Image 1 (cartoon, rainbow, N blue to C red):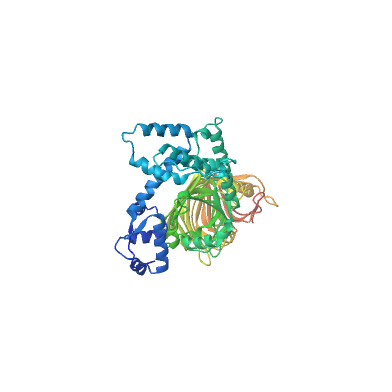
Image 2 (image 1 turned 45 degrees about the vertical axis):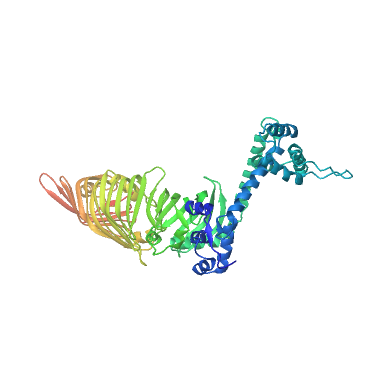
Length: 597
């Protein structure tokens, strides 16, 4: 290509720049750079690669978007337009019967005001070259006068009919017939046929096309793109991503499914399937838009959430992929070795692919989790109605509300309000995620129903009343069982309007037996003590129990299904006061009260 050649945009080129119909980046850049003044050599220097520039200029010239400034384009375009118009007229004439067309031309020629029309004369001069080939052995036709326009047109029409390809005699497929119809190559006689035949063929063609499309959708080798998808996902999330396979999926709607997805060096996020639903109009553009990503059967470690949503300075993957919506179904959040499952909801990503918000809930809406990412620290909240905690033992919360923050090192719930077992509980909870996870919290309860609470924690202990306590708790361990075993707490405990069955302090003092007293019960108005909690149970020191004329002081231990303690019982009569020490020991279901003397 001449380096000094200068190109200018055509009207089609100007329209392509304005409407952005050229999506290929290099081709669009060269089209914009063509200005009618800069030679090709200068464009190559600006672009950096002469060979590429020559190829792109040739492609633009072939498409009719640019032309050389010194080329005589006007006359050539005019000739092409005139020739195209003439061919269209001839095709239209060929599609009609010969005799009526010839008569119409004859009548039009006879009505002409001038005996010799320059346009018809020029047209007739060109038509003798289109005469049909003579049959074998036939004599050559005699030359006809040039002014016989009717004969010239007739010969041209016969020549065009003889030159028709042989495929008109053979069968045509529905797609070929459709193309001929839009191209104007189907005559009126062919248009007339059995009613609905054309639409039936169109329907059959559409069905065949859809079948081919479905076959391509299912048979395409998607796994060949697996390395590129993993690389793109790793860059988008900022953590190693591994995908087992890529396959098509039809439910809940046609999509591409990424199966067996793990994210993170320790696989902190595991996903059964990720279904990608793109906007079809963006598949061939530079930036693909995914209108929805559907995450199914996922398990996310809560401690990994801040790292997963860490903001990156430059995320190149987000320039090639844009996500409009992320849906989560049948997924769970894990904390240590516990999990809250059957969650569904939405996630939100910003333009750089950073996770900024999550909203999850259980199918019945009883539990809702909300989170907002603010500079790498998540503000989280949790609300529940009629929620039963996972694991064993499981507590039933009538109302549960908690608010706090989540960072890469700690979950801190600064406000926890709970209504359960006809009472209330408030407090704060903190859990560190370091190498040695550590738990600490402050719990205060008011008027908890002991009967319902002990059915869960100690079913064989028959103790009723309203429980109020204040405890400071701490524990260390990598799972909930270890935390339970290492639990330590100190505080105060009180029970009002209580009743303990199978422990009869009055009977043990008044009518002692050698083997102790079993059965009976003791009612009291108030029981208080200093509480110490550990992994196995509860210890009460400085116990004070009052019930009208009966009182007791001492210590009790409730652990491993046993009740052990020593109490000094006081019985006040009308004339005397009796004091006697007793020992309480034995399993919850059958304790024994012995008089010590």
